[in-house]
Every structure is written in C-alpha cells, then in structure tokens.
Image (cartoon, rainbow over all chains, first blue to last red; front, side):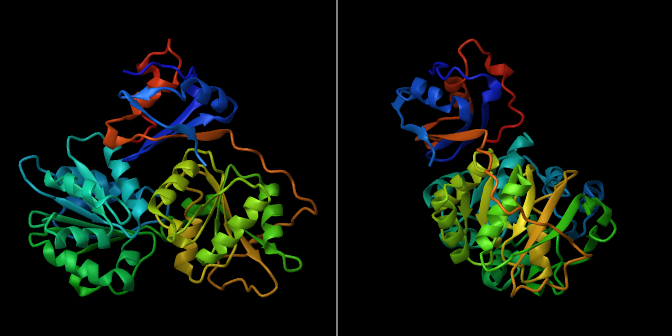
Amino acid sequence: MLLQKGQLQKDELGKIDVLDKSAYAAVKSSKINQTLQLIKAEKIKNKKVKIEIAS
Amino acid sequence: MQKATLDAVAKPNDVVLVSPTGSGKTLAFLLPVLSLLRSDVQGVQVLILVPSRELAIQIEQVFKQMGTAFKINSCYGGHSVRIEENNLQQAPAVLVGTPGRVTHHIGTEALKLENTHTLILDEFDKSLEFGFKDDMEYIIQQCTSLQKRVLTSATALNDIPRFVGLKNSISLNFTTKHQELKSSLVLKTVTVDGDDKLEALLLLLGKINAKQVIVFCNHREAVNRISEQLSLLKVAHGFYHGGLEQIDREKTLIKFRNGSATILVTTDLAARGLDIPEVDAVVHYQLPATEDVMIHRNGRTARMSAHGTAYFLLDKEDMMPEFVPGTPQAETLPKKMQPLKASEWQTLYISAGKKDKVNKMDIVGMLLQKNMEYASYPLAGLTC
C-alpha cells in the first residue's frame, strides 16, 4: 500500500475530494511544492498516477 | 425549523417548506427521511430532484456524512451514464438527481420508481419552472406508489402545478417569522465612477479583503469576459457557469470550497443551494432581475449564524431595484487598487479516483507525515 511520503502535518492538509477518475487535495501553499517533489513518483494502488498542481 | 419540519414530515401529509437560505433545509428534509426508509424494501424509496448538478452532488455528500446504512447515489448531466447505470443495478434507497438525467434513466429502464414512496423537490420553485416542467411531470408520473411529497426552497411559488399531486399539504413558511436571522447580512451599494465597472470590482475586492467572495453576473458572456480580464491582471479566481464542461464545473467548485480559490465569478447557476460557509461577501456585478434571484444570491453568504455582506455595483445606467429592502449603505472605493492576498491553500490534482478504488485515506496516507496515525486525521470534516 501507500507510504506516507508527503511529510505534511495534519493542519497543512485540507479538504480532499475523490471523484470518479480524479482526486483533489488542498495543501498549504507554503508546502505544496515540497510535497509535490516528494510524492510525484508515487504509485497509488500500484498504479502510476499523475500528480500536479491543479490549474 | 428543522424540528417543525421533522414533525410535519412524520405526519402522513405532504409538506411545503419555505425557509431562508442558509437555515439548514437540506438536513431538515434528510433527517425525517431516514425514519421513512426501510431496509426490507428493494428499489429507490426516496427520490430527490434538484435543479442543478452540483446541488445533487452536495446533497449526496451530506447524506453520506450522516453515516446511515442506506445507500445513496446521484445522477446528473455531464456525469458518466455508465457509472450511474452500474450504480442503479443495485438500486440505492435514496436517489438524488437532476430532472433531465433521471428522465434518461427511466427511458432506458435503468431506473424504476414503482417503489418510491417519497418525493422531494428541492428548490422546487426552480425545478418546477418552465424548462424542467416536462421532465418533472414525466418523472412524477412514473412514481406510481408515491405517499409523500416534500417541497423546499427559500422562495415560494404561487401556483404549484397540479401534476405534482400535492394533497393535504402542510405549509411551513419561516421566511417572515425568522427575518431577524438574516440581520447578519448587510447590504451595501457601490457607485461606479465613469464606465469601468471591472476596475470598480477590483478596487472593491481589494478593499473588503473577503475570505471568500462570489461575484454574480447575469450572463455567461459577462462571466467569461470578467474572468479573462482578471486572468490578464493575474488575479487568481475561479469561474463557473452552465457552458463549462462538467469536470471543470466540479473542479472550480472543489477549489473554491477548499479555499484554493477565494474569488468565484459566476452566473445564477451558483445562486441556489450551494453551501459554502466561508463566503463572507457576494457582489452583484450585474443587478438581479427579480427579488427571488436576489434572495438566492444573497443567501450564499451569512449562512447559519455567520455574517456576510452583499454589494450592489451600480454604474450610471443601473437603477437600484425596488425590491431591495431598506436603504443599503454606500461603500466608497479607494483610489488605488490594494493587492489581493494570495490564498493560503493550493490544490493537488491526482489522476486516480473512485474507479481506481482510491479513497480518501489512501490520499491522506500518501500526504501526511510518516509518523502520524491515520486515526488522528480529523475525518469528520471530510466528504467522500
């Protein structure tokens, strides 16, 4: 399963929305670049996923 | 209001509930519905019809948060028909949907409503409007064993069409009695010097420094135009109207709800029902055409016990509509634009979802510190 790689404190992670084919997680602006670097190569459910800052 | 509704729905009568925006109508009709659900009945028992897609999503989420044993699904235009058909194979006890898509599923026989005993029309004055009428009449005809109808909105409708089939209805109207509830809403006018309304909007946004603000326009074109100009000026914002792809509509609202976007420019599509507690200001960039439209727009702020302000932007040609109550205070604009605060939050997009069996805990697990317990993450505030 997943590792906790993002290194966020719980008050740095906001609302999470899971849709049919995508998911969105709010992260404190000050941490988001660091988090993205840490997890961008992660797999979810053994599947490579694309993770990026939502436009 | 919720107590009175609970009592009224418990009786065998139909109920028409008119109650101010932000007073908790969704829970008021969902709570009593629970006692009407039976675990030994197959098929959809309660059908909730709503006039907008995102309202269907919101009600589905509220019901899921209630943590009952009963299944709820939503169906609405722009959503995958196949996913919805799969959901309907094991019919949920509660179905919430928009009239068009519900009609579609009846047509393909994916949805059967013969066991539906309770029908709820949320924002009924909207969903019984001209454009929805044919679908609504057709759907209600399919509900052959209907025993109860519950109609709710913040604004009433003088003539409820006969096909709704209301009988022995109890009318609950909290809009006059509870007006003091809305003293938390302040109305203000902003007079635009010259002809640059957009500049006035920017000056206003800079001055009020709202946590979250919704800017209402009357047409999609105006939303697009303002949005383009805000983008040119590098003002972060979301824009929302019925002409967008469904995924973009949902993404925009997700980013507004989670605080990544603090400004939402929209048509009246966002005027009804959406419950976003942090909105502390609404701006009528274009004046509302009717009193009902104004009530619903203003109702996006000052929800429950929170405070909020509604601003009417008036240029030379704009006349303050007569239905605006009282005498709004005049807000003066500064000469110079004050920089807008950047949002505290940003949103990570992840290209996997429910179809990939990904749930919220998977994402929490990936993002939080390794030494943290899953259990310590406050789940109550999350929606699924």
